[in-house]
Image 1 (spheres, one colour):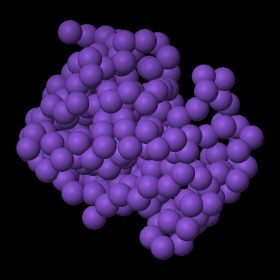
Image 2 (cartoon, one colour):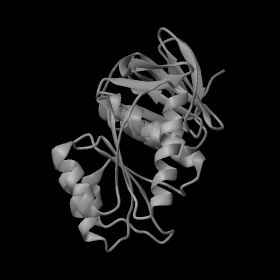
Image 3 (cartoon, one colour):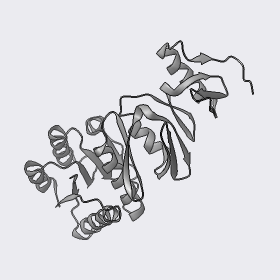
Image 4 (cartoon, one colour):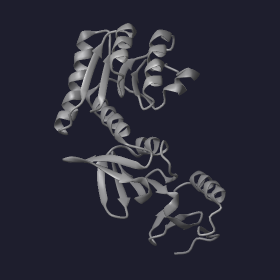
Length: 247
């Protein structure tokens, strides 16, 4: 079972966040464990008893006590995911890099609480070789090596693999953040496409050719430059670089 912890000074806010997250997973028929606290001191006691997997809390730049407490939790549980809320002027200090993956919640609305709770849960139950996503009524786990590409459409992302095609609710930017943490290489070629480098057979300035024969368009020169640099580094003779667009 995945352990969630919520640390907010105000009881009303604490109850709201906790209840929204519980409702999110209740709808997905997923049971989670919950710990609640009001301060860094209480959070430390929670960590001593049972270290959370996902932690929601407020953070100010100068809040060294909370930061040190969360770092203590991170040392106990390397997979800990921090989800913080902060002022619009919050600039994470250098030491916050030790807390990655860490997500900054835009606000405490139901929309963002549900989105980031689901994102955290899926990230925790992932491993380095698989990707997890939810399609009602269940979660699916797929080896990243089998994924050909992701394609976005608004708030939805389509996942295309050797064995299935599904659509789940998560923005492609968040999918890209998750996939970067895995033992694989996916390349952004378009604001709507994230492609598995292992499934590329050739490319030009304008498109990527997959091993299946499917073509995906490259939308900007910056994407092409990044793609070209990565594929050149791979030094894979199987991947052909087409100098001119055809078809």
